[in-house]
Length: 396
Image 1 (cartoon, one colour):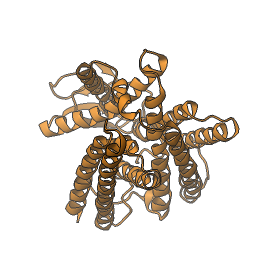
Image 2 (cartoon, rainbow, N blue to C red):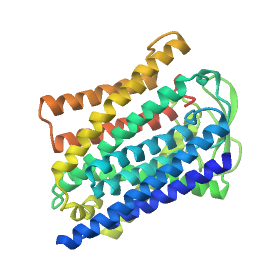
Image 3 (tube, rainbow, N blue to C red):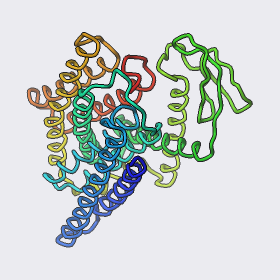
Image 4 (cartoon, rainbow, N blue to C red):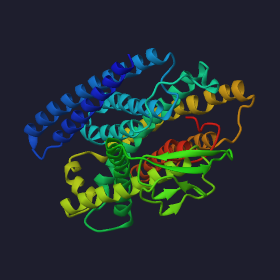
């Protein structure tokens, strides 16, 4: 059953990849009725493929649940792949309403990157630790992931809007910010590539060090050690480290994770540089002509609707259900754990977005930039808070 589950996830990933390519093909330079027919045909094909991929990934989720005996959202691999699945689910719903092919060109690759990122973590099925043995696991975590998945579509729509309307004829702060966003997305791809290459090569190097519990232990790196553990000693003659990780990073295996983070930034820079050399212009400037037939107001509406739907779902899952479970597990509703703090920050940010949108008339470009910032907060919560910052949710 576990092998079937893995195969279904792999099939879903391939289908999502094909759907992305199909949506990209739909952004044609044709005009008139010929363009309308072409766009409709390829858009419908991409949409059907997205649904098929979602069904395959749903099969992965169900079969892994059966194999493990609990909802498969208990570690970073399971949660992150589920989060990606919820992004696809949100895209399917919103595309069904707005029929905007450009949304598929951006939303599907982001979901793919999230799923690929999650797939780099250990996939072994393990019994739940006592803290997670509760029905609130599937209620709290799945609802929070669904909310985040819907909110993430607002980023895809907001990013499309900005690429469409920002003047790319001159270099400005706005164009530089858009390029930084592209670079950060490529850093995720860089993480996937460098992790896959290292895994295929079977690389590892080991350190003897004292962890956050003051226990002497062995830390195994699967990438060349650019960043070593503080006061650690390398147990072999492999490359590195060049620097030691900051002592305040107290998460589980934080030095190893920080080393992976640095490799991701470096690989993202390499990928960005290669693409820039091929295009001979800014990446977003190369994309913009394909979006000129898109109505900005429609994309702005999609980003707003994503927040309007995702915000209450996220609030219910990440705050209300979380506090109920915290009261049962730790006898307090709130404890300022890093994960709780960043869930609150996410809630307050999107509440502010809705306030500015509805009361101050922040439509268009201002609204789009807020959607981008909101996604950065979500990803910081997923990556940095889970991997580097120590807390009660470190096991996640």
